Image (cartoon, rainbow over the protein chains, first blue to last red):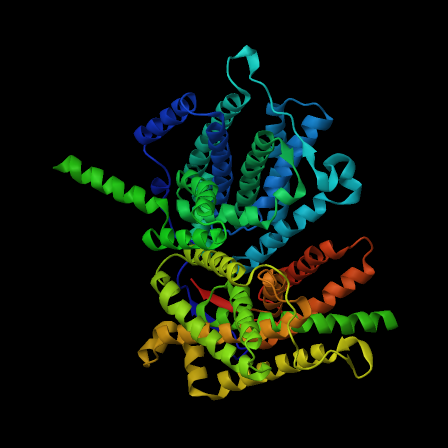
Length: 339
Length: 292
Protein backbone atom coordinates (compact mmCIF):
# COMPACT_ATOMS: atom_id res chain seq x y z
CA UNK A 1 0.00 0.00 0.00
CA UNK A 2 2.63 2.48 -0.99
CA UNK A 3 1.51 5.92 -2.03
CA UNK A 4 3.76 5.72 -5.04
CA UNK A 5 2.12 6.18 -8.38
CA UNK A 6 1.50 2.97 -10.15
CA UNK A 7 1.32 2.35 -13.83
CA UNK A 8 -1.47 0.00 -14.72
CA UNK A 9 -1.96 -1.25 -18.21
CA UNK A 10 -5.43 -0.66 -19.57
CA UNK A 11 -7.15 -3.82 -18.43
CA UNK A 12 -10.78 -4.69 -18.98
CA UNK A 13 -13.04 -1.86 -20.01
CA UNK A 14 -15.87 -0.70 -17.81
CA UNK A 15 -18.40 -0.92 -20.61
CA UNK A 16 -18.06 -3.36 -23.47
CA UNK A 17 -17.40 -2.08 -26.91
CA UNK A 18 -20.51 -2.73 -28.99
CA UNK A 19 -20.15 -1.97 -32.68
CA UNK A 20 -22.81 0.43 -33.84
CA UNK A 21 -24.38 -1.95 -36.32
CA UNK A 22 -24.98 -4.40 -33.47
CA UNK A 23 -26.90 -1.74 -31.53
CA UNK A 24 -30.19 -1.97 -33.42
CA UNK A 25 -32.63 -4.38 -35.04
CA UNK A 26 -32.96 -4.97 -38.78
CA UNK A 27 -35.70 -3.09 -40.65
CA UNK A 28 -37.84 -6.19 -41.19
CA UNK A 29 -37.86 -7.22 -37.54
CA UNK A 30 -38.55 -3.65 -36.45
CA UNK A 31 -41.64 -3.44 -38.68
CA UNK A 32 -42.99 -6.75 -37.36
CA UNK A 33 -42.56 -5.56 -33.76
CA UNK A 34 -44.21 -2.24 -34.59
CA UNK A 35 -47.17 -3.96 -36.23
CA UNK A 36 -47.62 -6.17 -33.16
CA UNK A 37 -47.51 -3.10 -30.91
CA UNK A 38 -50.19 -1.43 -33.05
CA UNK A 39 -52.58 -4.38 -33.14
CA UNK A 40 -52.37 -5.91 -29.66
CA UNK A 41 -54.21 -3.10 -27.78
CA UNK A 42 -57.30 -3.74 -29.92
CA UNK A 43 -57.52 -7.25 -28.49
CA UNK A 44 -56.83 -6.86 -24.76
CA UNK A 45 -58.34 -5.31 -21.63
CA UNK A 46 -57.74 -1.75 -20.40
CA UNK A 47 -55.49 -2.84 -17.55
CA UNK A 48 -53.15 -4.64 -19.91
CA UNK A 49 -53.11 -1.61 -22.18
CA UNK A 50 -52.08 0.48 -19.18
CA UNK A 51 -49.27 -1.97 -18.43
CA UNK A 52 -48.11 -1.84 -22.03
CA UNK A 53 -48.07 1.96 -21.80
CA UNK A 54 -45.90 1.73 -18.71
CA UNK A 55 -43.66 -0.74 -20.54
CA UNK A 56 -43.07 1.77 -23.33
CA UNK A 57 -42.46 4.54 -20.80
CA UNK A 58 -39.93 2.58 -18.76
CA UNK A 59 -38.47 1.36 -22.04
CA UNK A 60 -37.80 4.98 -23.00
CA UNK A 61 -36.16 5.65 -19.64
CA UNK A 62 -33.94 2.57 -20.02
CA UNK A 63 -33.17 3.63 -23.59
CA UNK A 64 -31.99 6.98 -22.25
CA UNK A 65 -29.67 5.25 -19.82
CA UNK A 66 -28.48 3.04 -22.66
CA UNK A 67 -27.51 6.09 -24.72
CA UNK A 68 -25.49 7.33 -21.76
CA UNK A 69 -23.88 4.08 -20.62
CA UNK A 70 -23.92 1.90 -23.71
CA UNK A 71 -23.18 4.84 -25.97
CA UNK A 72 -20.75 7.07 -24.13
CA UNK A 73 -19.63 4.72 -21.36
CA UNK A 74 -20.73 6.86 -18.40
CA UNK A 75 -22.60 5.31 -15.46
CA UNK A 76 -25.58 6.89 -13.89
CA UNK A 77 -27.58 5.96 -10.84
CA UNK A 78 -29.33 9.31 -10.99
CA UNK A 79 -31.82 8.67 -13.79
CA UNK A 80 -34.70 8.81 -11.31
CA UNK A 81 -33.87 12.47 -10.71
CA UNK A 82 -34.25 13.36 -14.40
CA UNK A 83 -37.41 11.26 -14.55
CA UNK A 84 -38.78 13.22 -11.59
CA UNK A 85 -37.92 16.58 -13.15
CA UNK A 86 -39.73 15.57 -16.34
CA UNK A 87 -42.76 14.30 -14.43
CA UNK A 88 -43.01 17.42 -12.30
CA UNK A 89 -42.50 19.79 -15.23
CA UNK A 90 -45.46 18.23 -17.01
CA UNK A 91 -47.62 18.00 -13.92
CA UNK A 92 -47.01 21.61 -12.87
CA UNK A 93 -47.56 22.96 -16.40
CA UNK A 94 -50.75 20.96 -16.84
CA UNK A 95 -52.26 21.73 -13.46
CA UNK A 96 -51.09 25.31 -12.86
CA UNK A 97 -50.80 26.66 -16.39
CA UNK A 98 -53.51 24.48 -17.99
CA UNK A 99 -51.17 23.61 -20.80
CA UNK A 100 -52.04 20.82 -23.21
CA UNK A 101 -50.35 17.55 -22.18
CA UNK A 102 -48.69 17.06 -25.55
CA UNK A 103 -47.09 20.51 -25.40
CA UNK A 104 -45.54 19.79 -22.01
CA UNK A 105 -43.37 17.03 -23.46
CA UNK A 106 -41.00 19.25 -25.47
CA UNK A 107 -40.83 21.68 -22.56
CA UNK A 108 -39.77 18.97 -20.13
CA UNK A 109 -37.29 17.68 -22.68
CA UNK A 110 -35.69 21.12 -22.84
CA UNK A 111 -35.74 21.59 -19.06
CA UNK A 112 -34.20 18.15 -18.49
CA UNK A 113 -31.63 18.65 -21.23
CA UNK A 114 -30.44 21.79 -19.47
CA UNK A 115 -30.46 20.07 -16.11
CA UNK A 116 -28.54 17.04 -17.40
CA UNK A 117 -26.09 19.19 -19.32
CA UNK A 118 -25.33 21.28 -16.25
CA UNK A 119 -24.98 18.17 -14.11
CA UNK A 120 -22.66 16.67 -16.69
CA UNK A 121 -20.23 19.58 -16.28
CA UNK A 122 -18.91 18.82 -12.77
CA UNK A 123 -19.35 15.09 -13.45
CA UNK A 124 -16.77 15.41 -16.23
CA UNK A 125 -13.92 14.95 -13.82
CA UNK A 126 -15.43 11.79 -12.37
CA UNK A 127 -15.63 8.34 -13.86
CA UNK A 128 -16.59 4.81 -12.84
CA UNK A 129 -17.43 4.41 -9.17
CA UNK A 130 -16.99 8.10 -8.48
CA UNK A 131 -19.49 9.07 -11.13
CA UNK A 132 -21.86 6.42 -9.79
CA UNK A 133 -21.64 8.04 -6.35
CA UNK A 134 -22.21 11.55 -7.72
CA UNK A 135 -25.29 10.51 -9.67
CA UNK A 136 -26.45 8.50 -6.69
CA UNK A 137 -26.26 11.66 -4.58
CA UNK A 138 -28.47 13.40 -7.13
CA UNK A 139 -31.01 10.58 -6.92
CA UNK A 140 -31.18 10.66 -3.12
CA UNK A 141 -31.40 14.45 -3.03
CA UNK A 142 -34.21 14.79 -5.56
CA UNK A 143 -37.18 13.56 -3.46
CA UNK A 144 -36.03 15.78 -0.58
CA UNK A 145 -35.67 18.80 -2.87
CA UNK A 146 -39.19 18.28 -4.21
CA UNK A 147 -40.50 18.37 -0.64
CA UNK A 148 -38.88 21.75 0.14
CA UNK A 149 -41.24 24.27 1.69
CA UNK A 150 -40.85 27.15 -0.71
CA UNK A 151 -41.66 24.92 -3.66
CA UNK A 152 -44.74 23.52 -2.00
CA UNK A 153 -47.11 25.91 -3.73
CA UNK A 154 -46.06 24.45 -7.07
CA UNK A 155 -45.19 20.87 -6.26
CA UNK A 156 -47.81 20.12 -3.64
CA UNK A 157 -45.12 19.03 -1.16
CA UNK A 158 -45.28 15.51 0.22
CA UNK A 159 -48.82 15.06 -1.10
CA UNK A 160 -47.81 15.59 -4.69
CA UNK A 161 -50.09 16.60 -7.55
CA UNK A 162 -52.97 14.87 -9.27
CA UNK A 163 -52.85 14.98 -13.06
CA UNK A 164 -55.93 14.68 -15.26
CA UNK A 165 -55.84 12.02 -17.90
CA UNK A 166 -56.42 13.36 -21.41
CA UNK A 167 -59.39 12.22 -23.54
CA UNK A 168 -58.92 11.00 -27.08
CA UNK A 169 -58.96 14.00 -29.45
CA UNK A 170 -61.22 14.57 -32.49
CA UNK A 171 -63.92 12.44 -30.88
CA UNK A 172 -62.06 9.24 -31.67
CA UNK A 173 -63.98 6.24 -30.34
CA UNK A 174 -61.40 4.87 -27.92
CA UNK A 175 -60.89 4.81 -24.16
CA UNK A 176 -58.47 7.19 -22.44
CA UNK A 177 -56.08 4.30 -21.83
CA UNK A 178 -56.05 3.23 -25.46
CA UNK A 179 -55.51 6.78 -26.67
CA UNK A 180 -52.68 7.32 -24.21
CA UNK A 181 -51.13 4.07 -25.36
CA UNK A 182 -51.10 5.13 -29.00
CA UNK A 183 -49.84 8.58 -28.06
CA UNK A 184 -47.00 7.01 -26.03
CA UNK A 185 -46.24 4.60 -28.88
CA UNK A 186 -45.95 7.51 -31.31
CA UNK A 187 -43.55 9.36 -29.02
CA UNK A 188 -41.57 6.17 -28.37
CA UNK A 189 -41.15 5.36 -32.05
CA UNK A 190 -40.05 8.94 -32.76
CA UNK A 191 -37.49 8.87 -29.95
CA UNK A 192 -36.28 5.40 -30.91
CA UNK A 193 -35.62 6.53 -34.48
CA UNK A 194 -33.91 9.64 -33.12
CA UNK A 195 -31.71 7.52 -30.84
CA UNK A 196 -30.73 5.12 -33.60
CA UNK A 197 -29.81 7.99 -35.89
CA UNK A 198 -27.99 9.82 -33.11
CA UNK A 199 -25.74 6.82 -32.52
CA UNK A 200 -25.07 6.52 -36.25
CA UNK A 201 -24.20 10.19 -36.57
CA UNK A 202 -20.93 11.97 -36.01
CA UNK A 203 -21.88 12.62 -32.39
CA UNK A 204 -22.71 8.95 -31.88
CA UNK A 205 -19.35 7.90 -33.23
CA UNK A 206 -17.72 10.40 -30.88
CA UNK A 207 -19.66 8.88 -27.93
CA UNK A 208 -18.45 5.40 -28.83
CA UNK A 209 -14.88 6.55 -29.31
CA UNK A 210 -14.97 8.03 -25.82
CA UNK A 211 -16.52 4.85 -24.44
CA UNK A 212 -13.86 2.63 -25.97
CA UNK A 213 -10.84 4.74 -25.18
CA UNK A 214 -11.07 8.26 -23.89
CA UNK A 215 -7.42 9.12 -24.36
CA UNK A 216 -7.30 7.80 -27.91
CA UNK A 217 -10.53 9.65 -28.72
CA UNK A 218 -9.16 12.96 -27.52
CA UNK A 219 -5.93 12.33 -29.44
CA UNK A 220 -8.04 11.96 -32.59
CA UNK A 221 -9.62 15.31 -32.03
CA UNK A 222 -12.87 14.38 -30.31
CA UNK A 223 -13.88 17.12 -27.89
CA UNK A 224 -14.29 14.78 -24.91
CA UNK A 225 -15.80 17.29 -22.50
CA UNK A 226 -18.36 18.49 -25.03
CA UNK A 227 -19.57 15.04 -26.06
CA UNK A 228 -19.68 13.69 -22.52
CA UNK A 229 -21.89 16.53 -21.34
CA UNK A 230 -23.93 16.25 -24.53
CA UNK A 231 -24.57 12.57 -23.77
CA UNK A 232 -25.74 13.51 -20.27
CA UNK A 233 -28.02 16.18 -21.69
CA UNK A 234 -29.61 13.92 -24.32
CA UNK A 235 -30.04 11.09 -21.84
CA UNK A 236 -31.67 13.44 -19.35
CA UNK A 237 -33.99 14.88 -22.02
CA UNK A 238 -35.24 11.44 -23.07
CA UNK A 239 -35.65 10.39 -19.44
CA UNK A 240 -37.56 13.61 -18.85
CA UNK A 241 -40.00 12.82 -21.66
CA UNK A 242 -40.47 9.35 -20.18
CA UNK A 243 -41.13 11.00 -16.82
CA UNK A 244 -43.75 13.31 -18.35
CA UNK A 245 -45.53 10.41 -20.02
CA UNK A 246 -45.30 8.47 -16.76
CA UNK A 247 -46.94 11.31 -14.83
CA UNK A 248 -49.79 11.49 -17.37
CA UNK A 249 -50.29 7.71 -17.39
CA UNK A 250 -50.24 7.27 -13.60
CA UNK A 251 -52.18 10.56 -13.14
CA UNK A 252 -50.18 11.40 -10.07
CA UNK A 253 -46.77 12.72 -9.07
CA UNK A 254 -45.31 12.56 -5.57
CA UNK A 255 -41.71 12.90 -4.36
CA UNK A 256 -41.55 9.36 -3.04
CA UNK A 257 -42.34 7.76 -6.40
CA UNK A 258 -38.96 8.92 -7.66
CA UNK A 259 -36.48 7.46 -5.21
CA UNK A 260 -33.22 5.63 -5.81
CA UNK A 261 -35.21 2.40 -6.19
CA UNK A 262 -36.47 3.68 -9.55
CA UNK A 263 -32.92 4.45 -10.66
CA UNK A 264 -31.80 0.96 -9.64
CA UNK A 265 -34.71 -0.62 -11.53
CA UNK A 266 -33.78 1.30 -14.66
CA UNK A 267 -30.20 0.14 -14.27
CA UNK A 268 -31.32 -3.50 -13.94
CA UNK A 269 -33.50 -3.02 -17.02
CA UNK A 270 -30.48 -1.92 -18.99
CA UNK A 271 -28.37 -4.90 -17.88
CA UNK A 272 -31.12 -7.42 -18.57
CA UNK A 273 -31.81 -5.90 -21.98
CA UNK A 274 -28.15 -5.80 -22.90
CA UNK A 275 -25.92 -2.77 -22.41
CA UNK A 276 -25.61 -0.87 -25.66
CA UNK A 277 -28.39 -2.70 -27.50
CA UNK A 278 -31.22 -0.22 -27.98
CA UNK A 279 -34.15 -2.62 -28.62
CA UNK A 280 -33.09 -4.48 -25.45
CA UNK A 281 -34.26 -1.45 -23.46
CA UNK A 282 -37.85 -2.58 -23.95
CA UNK A 283 -37.06 -6.18 -23.00
CA UNK A 284 -35.41 -4.82 -19.86
CA UNK A 285 -38.43 -2.63 -19.15
CA UNK A 286 -40.67 -5.70 -19.39
CA UNK A 287 -38.39 -7.45 -16.89
CA UNK A 288 -38.56 -4.66 -14.32
CA UNK A 289 -42.34 -4.30 -14.66
CA UNK A 290 -43.46 -7.93 -14.75
CA UNK A 291 -40.86 -9.94 -12.81
CA UNK A 292 -41.48 -8.25 -9.41
CA UNK A 293 -45.21 -8.99 -9.83
CA UNK A 294 -44.41 -12.56 -10.82
CA UNK A 295 -42.16 -12.94 -7.78
CA UNK A 296 -44.94 -11.63 -5.56
CA UNK A 297 -47.39 -14.17 -6.94
CA UNK A 298 -44.94 -17.05 -6.37
CA UNK A 299 -44.33 -16.19 -2.72
CA UNK A 300 -45.58 -13.13 -0.85
CA UNK A 301 -43.15 -13.28 2.06
CA UNK A 302 -40.13 -14.08 -0.03
CA UNK A 303 -40.90 -11.95 -3.10
CA UNK A 304 -37.56 -10.14 -2.81
CA UNK A 305 -35.65 -13.41 -2.67
CA UNK A 306 -37.57 -14.87 -5.62
CA UNK A 307 -36.84 -11.70 -7.59
CA UNK A 308 -33.16 -12.00 -6.71
CA UNK A 309 -33.02 -15.65 -7.76
CA UNK A 310 -34.75 -14.89 -11.07
CA UNK A 311 -32.32 -12.04 -11.69
CA UNK A 312 -29.41 -14.37 -10.97
CA UNK A 313 -30.83 -16.93 -13.39
CA UNK A 314 -31.07 -14.33 -16.13
CA UNK A 315 -27.52 -13.07 -15.68
CA UNK A 316 -26.12 -16.61 -15.53
CA UNK A 317 -27.90 -17.71 -18.67
CA UNK A 318 -27.31 -14.51 -20.63
CA UNK A 319 -24.59 -12.37 -19.03
CA UNK A 320 -24.84 -9.97 -21.97
CA UNK A 321 -28.59 -9.59 -21.64
CA UNK A 322 -31.27 -10.01 -24.27
CA UNK A 323 -28.76 -8.92 -26.90
CA UNK A 324 -27.15 -12.34 -26.59
CA UNK A 325 -30.44 -14.08 -27.43
CA UNK A 326 -30.93 -11.80 -30.41
CA UNK A 327 -27.46 -12.57 -31.73
CA UNK A 328 -28.04 -16.33 -31.30
CA UNK A 329 -31.35 -16.01 -33.14
CA UNK A 330 -29.72 -14.11 -35.95
CA UNK A 331 -27.02 -16.76 -36.37
CA UNK A 332 -29.66 -19.50 -36.38
CA UNK A 333 -31.67 -17.73 -39.08
CA UNK A 334 -28.48 -17.22 -41.09
CA UNK A 335 -27.68 -20.94 -40.90
CA UNK A 336 -31.20 -21.96 -41.92
CA UNK A 337 -31.02 -19.68 -44.93
CA UNK A 338 -27.75 -21.23 -46.07
CA UNK A 339 -29.11 -24.78 -45.95
CA UNK B 1 -17.19 27.18 20.37
CA UNK B 2 -18.44 24.66 22.88
CA UNK B 3 -21.29 23.79 20.53
CA UNK B 4 -18.76 23.23 17.78
CA UNK B 5 -16.56 20.87 19.85
CA UNK B 6 -19.60 18.99 21.05
CA UNK B 7 -20.89 18.53 17.54
CA UNK B 8 -17.48 17.38 16.33
CA UNK B 9 -17.34 14.84 19.17
CA UNK B 10 -20.81 13.57 18.35
CA UNK B 11 -19.75 13.42 14.70
CA UNK B 12 -16.76 11.28 15.58
CA UNK B 13 -19.04 8.93 17.50
CA UNK B 14 -21.37 8.36 14.53
CA UNK B 15 -18.35 8.47 12.24
CA UNK B 16 -17.04 5.32 13.91
CA UNK B 17 -20.00 3.41 12.46
CA UNK B 18 -19.29 4.67 8.97
CA UNK B 19 -15.57 4.04 9.37
CA UNK B 20 -16.22 0.38 10.24
CA UNK B 21 -18.43 -0.12 7.22
CA UNK B 22 -16.09 1.82 4.92
CA UNK B 23 -13.25 -0.46 5.98
CA UNK B 24 -15.25 -3.50 4.88
CA UNK B 25 -16.12 -1.78 1.58
CA UNK B 26 -12.47 -0.99 0.85
CA UNK B 27 -11.41 -4.54 1.73
CA UNK B 28 -13.67 -6.04 -0.89
CA UNK B 29 -12.86 -3.33 -3.38
CA UNK B 30 -9.18 -4.22 -3.01
CA UNK B 31 -9.92 -7.87 -3.65
CA UNK B 32 -12.46 -7.72 -6.47
CA UNK B 33 -12.37 -4.19 -7.89
CA UNK B 34 -16.12 -3.67 -7.48
CA UNK B 35 -18.26 -2.02 -4.84
CA UNK B 36 -20.40 -4.73 -3.31
CA UNK B 37 -23.92 -3.37 -2.88
CA UNK B 38 -24.91 -6.41 -0.82
CA UNK B 39 -22.18 -5.81 1.76
CA UNK B 40 -24.54 -4.18 4.24
CA UNK B 41 -27.06 -6.98 3.93
CA UNK B 42 -24.37 -9.60 4.49
CA UNK B 43 -23.36 -7.76 7.66
CA UNK B 44 -26.99 -7.54 8.78
CA UNK B 45 -27.49 -11.27 8.26
CA UNK B 46 -24.38 -12.07 10.30
CA UNK B 47 -25.58 -9.78 13.08
CA UNK B 48 -28.89 -11.64 13.14
CA UNK B 49 -27.01 -14.94 13.48
CA UNK B 50 -25.17 -13.64 16.51
CA UNK B 51 -28.44 -12.36 17.98
CA UNK B 52 -30.02 -15.76 17.45
CA UNK B 53 -27.07 -17.46 19.15
CA UNK B 54 -27.43 -15.14 22.12
CA UNK B 55 -31.16 -15.90 22.26
CA UNK B 56 -30.18 -19.55 22.57
CA UNK B 57 -28.01 -18.70 25.56
CA UNK B 58 -24.53 -18.43 24.03
CA UNK B 59 -22.49 -15.72 25.81
CA UNK B 60 -21.64 -12.52 23.89
CA UNK B 61 -17.99 -13.14 23.04
CA UNK B 62 -18.56 -16.79 22.10
CA UNK B 63 -21.33 -15.80 19.69
CA UNK B 64 -19.09 -12.98 18.42
CA UNK B 65 -16.39 -15.48 17.45
CA UNK B 66 -18.83 -18.03 15.99
CA UNK B 67 -20.45 -15.28 13.92
CA UNK B 68 -17.11 -14.13 12.59
CA UNK B 69 -16.28 -17.66 11.51
CA UNK B 70 -19.73 -18.02 9.94
CA UNK B 71 -19.41 -14.68 8.11
CA UNK B 72 -15.98 -15.62 6.80
CA UNK B 73 -17.13 -19.00 5.50
CA UNK B 74 -20.32 -17.43 4.15
CA UNK B 75 -18.37 -14.76 2.28
CA UNK B 76 -16.08 -17.36 0.70
CA UNK B 77 -19.08 -19.55 -0.19
CA UNK B 78 -20.95 -16.66 -1.85
CA UNK B 79 -17.91 -15.91 -3.98
CA UNK B 80 -17.32 -19.54 -4.94
CA UNK B 81 -20.94 -20.39 -5.70
CA UNK B 82 -22.48 -17.16 -7.00
CA UNK B 83 -19.81 -14.84 -8.31
CA UNK B 84 -17.02 -17.05 -9.62
CA UNK B 85 -19.19 -18.09 -12.61
CA UNK B 86 -19.65 -14.38 -13.36
CA UNK B 87 -15.93 -13.61 -13.35
CA UNK B 88 -15.84 -13.28 -17.14
CA UNK B 89 -19.16 -11.45 -17.44
CA UNK B 90 -19.23 -7.66 -17.97
CA UNK B 91 -18.80 -5.43 -14.92
CA UNK B 92 -22.36 -4.13 -15.04
CA UNK B 93 -23.69 -7.69 -14.97
CA UNK B 94 -21.73 -8.24 -11.77
CA UNK B 95 -23.30 -5.13 -10.28
CA UNK B 96 -26.73 -6.54 -11.15
CA UNK B 97 -25.65 -9.71 -9.33
CA UNK B 98 -24.92 -7.67 -6.19
CA UNK B 99 -28.38 -6.13 -6.38
CA UNK B 100 -29.90 -9.61 -6.71
CA UNK B 101 -27.91 -10.81 -3.69
CA UNK B 102 -29.13 -7.76 -1.77
CA UNK B 103 -32.76 -8.63 -2.50
CA UNK B 104 -32.29 -12.29 -1.58
CA UNK B 105 -30.58 -11.68 1.77
CA UNK B 106 -32.88 -8.84 2.78
CA UNK B 107 -36.02 -10.77 2.03
CA UNK B 108 -34.82 -14.02 3.66
CA UNK B 109 -33.82 -12.20 6.84
CA UNK B 110 -37.25 -10.59 6.89
CA UNK B 111 -38.90 -13.97 6.61
CA UNK B 112 -36.74 -15.71 9.25
CA UNK B 113 -36.59 -12.96 11.89
CA UNK B 114 -39.44 -10.64 10.73
CA UNK B 115 -39.26 -6.86 10.47
CA UNK B 116 -39.79 -5.89 14.12
CA UNK B 117 -37.02 -3.85 15.72
CA UNK B 118 -34.87 -5.80 18.17
CA UNK B 119 -32.58 -4.70 20.99
CA UNK B 120 -28.98 -5.76 20.63
CA UNK B 121 -26.59 -5.92 23.60
CA UNK B 122 -23.29 -4.08 23.84
CA UNK B 123 -20.19 -5.49 25.53
CA UNK B 124 -18.93 -2.04 26.49
CA UNK B 125 -21.94 -0.74 28.43
CA UNK B 126 -23.67 2.50 27.60
CA UNK B 127 -22.72 4.86 30.43
CA UNK B 128 -21.20 8.26 29.55
CA UNK B 129 -17.55 7.99 28.52
CA UNK B 130 -15.12 10.02 30.70
CA UNK B 131 -18.04 12.10 31.95
CA UNK B 132 -19.00 13.28 28.44
CA UNK B 133 -22.69 13.18 27.57
CA UNK B 134 -21.97 12.90 23.88
CA UNK B 135 -19.87 9.77 23.67
CA UNK B 136 -20.99 6.65 25.48
CA UNK B 137 -18.64 3.87 26.43
CA UNK B 138 -20.13 1.84 23.61
CA UNK B 139 -19.20 4.45 21.04
CA UNK B 140 -15.73 4.79 22.52
CA UNK B 141 -15.38 1.02 22.36
CA UNK B 142 -16.52 1.09 18.74
CA UNK B 143 -13.86 3.66 17.86
CA UNK B 144 -11.29 1.53 19.70
CA UNK B 145 -12.26 -1.63 17.82
CA UNK B 146 -12.16 0.20 14.47
CA UNK B 147 -8.67 1.50 15.16
CA UNK B 148 -7.48 -1.95 16.33
CA UNK B 149 -8.94 -3.54 13.23
CA UNK B 150 -7.16 -1.03 11.04
CA UNK B 151 -3.82 -1.71 12.73
CA UNK B 152 -4.33 -5.47 12.43
CA UNK B 153 -5.14 -5.12 8.73
CA UNK B 154 -2.10 -2.96 8.19
CA UNK B 155 0.15 -5.62 9.68
CA UNK B 156 -1.64 -8.36 7.79
CA UNK B 157 -1.15 -6.69 4.42
CA UNK B 158 2.30 -5.33 5.09
CA UNK B 159 4.05 -8.15 6.91
CA UNK B 160 2.45 -11.51 6.09
CA UNK B 161 3.05 -13.62 3.01
CA UNK B 162 -0.64 -14.12 2.38
CA UNK B 163 -1.30 -10.39 2.73
CA UNK B 164 1.39 -9.70 0.17
CA UNK B 165 -0.10 -12.34 -2.15
CA UNK B 166 -3.54 -10.73 -1.87
CA UNK B 167 -2.13 -7.33 -2.74
CA UNK B 168 -0.30 -8.78 -5.70
CA UNK B 169 -3.37 -10.63 -6.95
CA UNK B 170 -5.45 -7.45 -6.74
CA UNK B 171 -3.04 -5.06 -8.43
CA UNK B 172 -1.50 -7.14 -11.23
CA UNK B 173 -3.37 -10.47 -11.54
CA UNK B 174 -1.40 -11.75 -14.56
CA UNK B 175 2.02 -11.31 -12.99
CA UNK B 176 0.73 -12.66 -9.67
CA UNK B 177 -0.37 -15.84 -11.41
CA UNK B 178 3.04 -16.17 -13.03
CA UNK B 179 4.80 -16.18 -9.67
CA UNK B 180 2.49 -18.93 -8.47
CA UNK B 181 -0.21 -17.10 -6.55
CA UNK B 182 -3.63 -18.68 -6.77
CA UNK B 183 -5.44 -15.46 -7.65
CA UNK B 184 -8.86 -17.06 -7.80
CA UNK B 185 -8.64 -18.14 -4.15
CA UNK B 186 -7.21 -14.77 -3.15
CA UNK B 187 -10.44 -13.22 -4.39
CA UNK B 188 -12.47 -15.70 -2.31
CA UNK B 189 -10.29 -14.89 0.69
CA UNK B 190 -10.95 -11.19 0.10
CA UNK B 191 -14.69 -11.85 0.11
CA UNK B 192 -14.37 -13.83 3.34
CA UNK B 193 -12.39 -11.13 5.11
CA UNK B 194 -14.67 -8.36 3.89
CA UNK B 195 -17.66 -10.34 5.08
CA UNK B 196 -16.08 -10.88 8.52
CA UNK B 197 -15.17 -7.19 8.86
CA UNK B 198 -18.72 -6.34 7.82
CA UNK B 199 -20.00 -8.69 10.53
CA UNK B 200 -17.90 -6.88 13.16
CA UNK B 201 -19.28 -3.57 11.90
CA UNK B 202 -22.83 -4.96 12.05
CA UNK B 203 -22.45 -6.22 15.61
CA UNK B 204 -21.01 -2.89 16.74
CA UNK B 205 -23.64 -0.82 14.96
CA UNK B 206 -26.65 -2.89 16.01
CA UNK B 207 -26.82 -1.53 19.60
CA UNK B 208 -27.01 2.01 18.16
CA UNK B 209 -29.39 1.65 15.23
CA UNK B 210 -31.23 -1.45 16.56
CA UNK B 211 -31.48 -4.75 14.79
CA UNK B 212 -33.84 -5.17 11.84
CA UNK B 213 -33.46 -6.30 8.21
CA UNK B 214 -33.23 -2.74 6.86
CA UNK B 215 -30.78 -1.47 9.47
CA UNK B 216 -27.87 -1.27 7.05
CA UNK B 217 -29.51 0.74 4.26
CA UNK B 218 -28.45 4.16 5.49
CA UNK B 219 -25.19 2.98 7.04
CA UNK B 220 -23.98 1.36 3.84
CA UNK B 221 -24.54 4.53 1.82
CA UNK B 222 -22.48 6.51 4.31
CA UNK B 223 -19.91 3.72 4.31
CA UNK B 224 -19.60 3.87 0.51
CA UNK B 225 -19.38 7.62 0.57
CA UNK B 226 -16.73 7.50 3.29
CA UNK B 227 -14.70 4.92 1.37
CA UNK B 228 -14.86 7.01 -1.80
CA UNK B 229 -13.96 10.17 0.11
CA UNK B 230 -10.94 8.54 1.71
CA UNK B 231 -9.87 6.86 -1.50
CA UNK B 232 -10.96 3.36 -2.41
CA UNK B 233 -7.42 2.05 -2.43
CA UNK B 234 -6.59 3.01 1.12
CA UNK B 235 -7.99 1.31 4.28
CA UNK B 236 -6.54 4.14 6.34
CA UNK B 237 -8.28 6.65 4.09
CA UNK B 238 -11.54 4.79 4.52
CA UNK B 239 -11.41 5.11 8.30
CA UNK B 240 -10.49 8.79 8.14
CA UNK B 241 -13.25 9.26 5.53
CA UNK B 242 -15.73 7.61 7.90
CA UNK B 243 -14.93 9.98 10.74
CA UNK B 244 -14.97 13.01 8.42
CA UNK B 245 -18.33 11.88 7.09
CA UNK B 246 -19.78 11.74 10.60
CA UNK B 247 -18.42 15.19 11.42
CA UNK B 248 -19.62 16.70 8.12
CA UNK B 249 -23.06 15.33 8.64
CA UNK B 250 -23.36 16.68 12.18
CA UNK B 251 -21.99 20.11 11.38
CA UNK B 252 -24.24 20.47 8.34
CA UNK B 253 -27.23 19.58 10.51
CA UNK B 254 -26.23 22.17 13.13
CA UNK B 255 -25.01 25.15 11.16
CA UNK B 256 -26.87 25.22 7.88
CA UNK B 257 -30.38 26.52 8.51
CA UNK B 258 -33.32 24.52 7.20
CA UNK B 259 -31.40 21.24 7.07
CA UNK B 260 -33.54 18.63 8.67
CA UNK B 261 -32.63 15.01 9.13
CA UNK B 262 -33.62 14.33 5.56
CA UNK B 263 -31.33 16.79 3.83
CA UNK B 264 -28.27 15.74 5.85
CA UNK B 265 -27.37 12.94 3.47
CA UNK B 266 -27.60 14.94 0.21
CA UNK B 267 -25.51 17.73 1.74
CA UNK B 268 -22.85 15.35 2.97
CA UNK B 269 -22.76 13.72 -0.47
CA UNK B 270 -22.54 17.10 -2.19
CA UNK B 271 -19.56 17.96 -0.01
CA UNK B 272 -17.88 14.70 -0.96
CA UNK B 273 -18.43 15.36 -4.62
CA UNK B 274 -16.84 18.77 -4.28
CA UNK B 275 -13.85 17.06 -2.67
CA UNK B 276 -13.75 14.54 -5.51
CA UNK B 277 -13.83 17.26 -8.16
CA UNK B 278 -10.63 18.62 -6.66
CA UNK B 279 -9.05 15.26 -5.77
CA UNK B 280 -10.58 12.64 -8.09
CA UNK B 281 -8.91 9.66 -6.39
CA UNK B 282 -10.14 10.58 -2.91
CA UNK B 283 -8.14 12.10 -0.08
CA UNK B 284 -5.69 9.24 0.42
CA UNK B 285 -6.22 7.23 -2.75
CA UNK B 286 -3.45 6.26 -5.09
CA UNK B 287 -3.51 8.08 -8.37
CA UNK B 288 -3.69 5.44 -11.06
CA UNK B 289 -1.88 6.27 -14.26
CA UNK B 290 -3.30 4.62 -17.34
CA UNK B 291 -1.20 3.35 -20.19
CA UNK B 292 -2.74 3.99 -23.58
